[in-house]
Image (tube, rainbow, N blue to C red):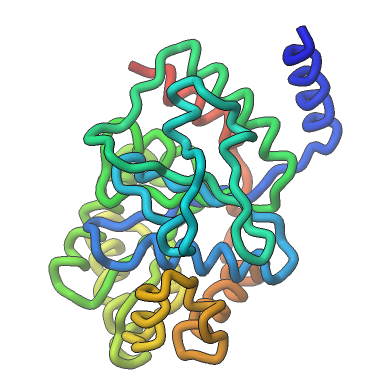
Length: 288
């Protein structure tokens, strides 16, 4: 009875605060392009600006955000889906005030949510959302039947790729798949491991040209990260590169990306309208 009363109190508080976080999914067409590392450092960069950020590791089989931070998380989202803890209890403290939920490891398949768990999960998410300015989902590489439902629920999508032709093609395939289902979600592109700013711009131009030609879709160039030795050193030290050396080329680049993304004047049209994340996710998860 006490748990039900506490849950009701939190739900009332959430409605009173009426805070709606900005939701985004960080995706990639293939693995190994640095998606999780960028998600983590981007989230930390937002937190360093005084924004409240919740980072979800949604790669339920190969989650590695905690490893990139040099942490060993006691619990993960898997423990929640197994019914062992509440969603709030799954939240861990990261650097600079960042909150994150670890993805766990060792699973070969994504969790399939039944109707009861869908209701519980979305209800607890709604309560948590009132605490944050940003909720960021670091998705697994590629698309599954379950992950697409989270991707389609967010307000914005950030796609990570590298200049490699295979990575570019896989990124396009990912964005095309999303476009076929929902053509309204804005796309932002980040080019990782570039040798120069020119290479980053040229890579984006290639992707944006194909998106425009074949899908009639606009995309936004969020920025690029250099092929930086400091970044590689930070990964080996299990320290986010923005904290390992804030004066490095990678750190400056991620801060520029953060500033651009957080700048309200960056957009050509309003992006935060439409059905709220929780409502969209609940509808999509109930669709079988």
